[in-house]
Image (cartoon, rainbow, N blue to C red):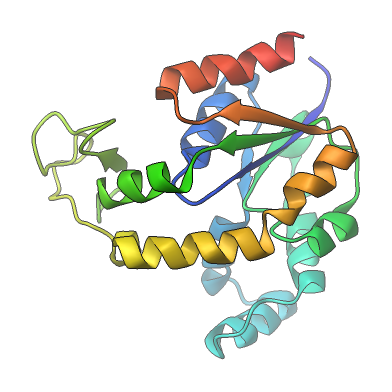
Length: 210
């Protein structure tokens, strides 16, 4: 299979993370999560890591040029030779323009705001292994208990309805313009994210067969 570079876009709670994991496993390429990279920076002591941590510690956004440097380091690793999926990057049109590169597809998981609010208020997370469940669409086998490690599931603070509405507002202001940006470049494909998880996955895989 030829090298494939994909970007996944979607509102918080759209199921984007679930689909990137499934697609990555199927295509045998890694998912590059900028959020995970930034969280992992705490363990590093390189000059770049120290500079990024100084911004995070002050509560400031990490400047785009530093984010790009961090991403560039990750993409040089051997597991990216056959391609990769970007999750959580780019977040803005400026980041997209700075990244450039050869992109095969930008997949946008399209979900209504009302659905997002319902989903996230029903989401439960395992504080131990970080597994995600949903009491409506993907409930644990035993109510309130993680299927994987048996820990008691929790409701994240950022999943209450008012916080979710604010997160959607930030998304619409900062990230939504990327939809127009990649549409103009004929790279964006919308996927109906209102369907069941397996149906969304099948829709995504069908895109690659065309």
